[in-house]
Image (cartoon, rainbow, N blue to C red; front, side, top):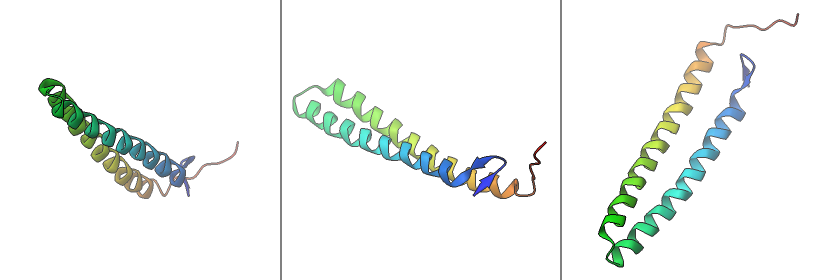
Length: 84
């Protein structure tokens, strides 16, 4: 579906792809944090767990963006585009 010249389905898919990528990076950060902790690198462990939390926040914001996309597309439904 296109709204105001934006293919909202494709746009939503791109947001989902970014979310998938961040989910993968989060898993790697999680693994690295535990490896650091197991090796006695407490500061590195703490920092990587902080990164993990930030990635969780980023994923939550992406979910909010997908919801906002749907809301904005519904609100903009009355707009028409004319070829000049």
